[in-house]
Length: 97
Image 1 (cartoon, helix red, strand yellow):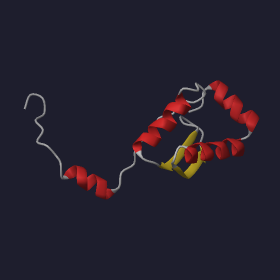
Image 2: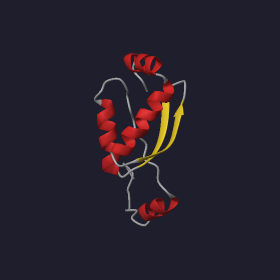
Image 3: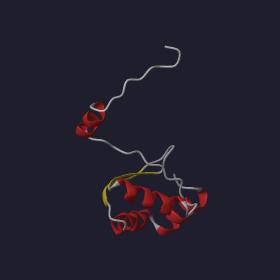
Image 4: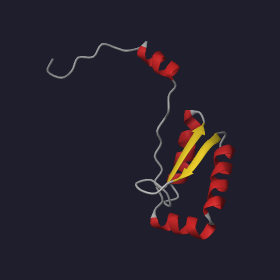
């Protein structure tokens, strides 16, 4: 989500230029930009990147510290990764049970 100043900069610079810059940023950190979509509503941009956790956090830190964007991440997991987690399920007792 762009802040007001970030959106003003994107309008001034051009949206294609911004997308190209972000692609280079992700690649320079060691990730791969798989999809980039502009949106309107609650969020302004959606990215799908292929990167390890440290790379994703590094990109998030770099972008968020600028103050021009409020970046949040959502890790995406494969079915195989979910099955690995399922194999580690501990026993859980809900409060009061």
